Amino acid sequence: MHRIRCIAEGGFKINNGPSTKDKGPMSQENNLETRDEASLPKPTQAGRIELCQEMIEEAMKCLGDGDKKCVLEKTRELIENNCHNGYAVGKEVSNGVKDVVHELWLVSDNEVWCGLLRMLRDLGISKKWVREALRLSTKDLNRWLVKCGIDWESKATRNDIVKVIEGLLRERFGWSEVRMCEEMFQFIGVDVNEFRRYGIEPCIWLDGLELLNNLRKPYWLGLAKSDLVVWKYDGGIRLELNTTNAVDAVFFLKILSMIKTPSLKIKRERGTPGMKYVHERISLGYYVYLGVNEWPWPIELNTNELERALDGFSDEELAEFIAGEIDGDGSVWYDDENGYVAAAISACKACPKRIVLDVLKEVITKRFGIVGTIDHFETADVLVFRGEKAVKLLRRVVKYIHHPLRRLRVELILALYDGKISKDVFTRLYKQTEYEQGRNDIKRNHGLDVLARAAPQTHTHGGTNNP
Image 1 (cartoon, rainbow, N blue to C red):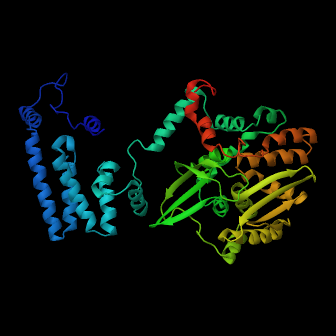
Image 2 (image 1 turned 120 degrees about the horizontal axis):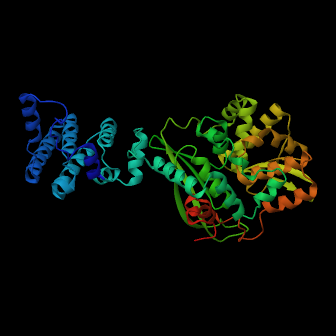
Image 3 (image 1 turned 90 degrees about the vertical axis):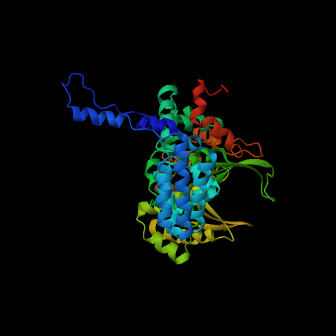
């Protein structure tokens, strides 16, 4: 990579002066200048090594004198002279440059640390080289980059590469977000074409997602008060979503990618003791790192602070917040036995998120005139709206709901209540959205499977059934 860059930038190009072809005679003075420039001697490897060793000694002397500014300058000179490149000067000399960087790191403070990292990035040094020099793990280096507010990517950033690849996949293989959505629904047993025959678009949850690239949208606060985990560490913020669920595997990935390209962790885990279905399953965790000032919402809110925040929202902003809650810890269903619709938001009994239920119940009543009840269970409490109240609430928030299965159920329920479909059609279509009993339910614990199926790379094989 370094050699290619040098060639591209002229590092190995010898300038023989401008061509005289078709330009008439040149003066002897210009000829001498260009000839002298072309014949400047290039340092031998031995000469370069000697030069680098001298600069390393000077940098170490500056360290001994406590002159950190001098060390930074000498480090810059070492790198500009390619002394860090083991291929050019040998491992011993390149390790000497790493030692200089490491020793400076050990005796410095935040200001110098951030200045050093910024300088190394600007000089085009790889993160791997910096990790080795500072003797930090990838995780620790990333924490420092976040703390210093440094965006460290190569000239062809990972996001740019992803965009290029997706562009090719769209052009050559017909991949798109809608195709991804259709593959996900097909995987869990939802026939998108049958829904479309009755005027219901299963992939409508993708509409408006691009607006969520703004973290100030109240939707993000709603999600943070439900499923989204917001961690604060060393002056930085980490947002994380975890699931084993097939639908959430695609939904969480798509949501976080509105902010930054998320990282993925995969692990095996067992269900919580006491759960109805306890077995080993694969959990997916998506996360992104933000600078300390990038997350606009308080991480913790007491009852009064949350109430003031919600009261300060417009009706549409409050609807966005509620949708974030429903997409996270919410549920929407039709009780066929009793013949009513229900929309609910749950929270564990003894956790900070529990205060949301009381505040939200009051604010929704005051703002929209929709009254819900809080049902109490052994380990959780649930704010529930039933019947016409649920339908009225869902009409308010439907356009902000992005969870694929919940949005599909809402669209289906509203189609029934608006008389667009018959009860028989509703019953048949709704059945496709239901979870099955037992641990082998395709919707519950197949997140990794659906992720592989819906990913754009899958479609480079010419068909979804091909390996």
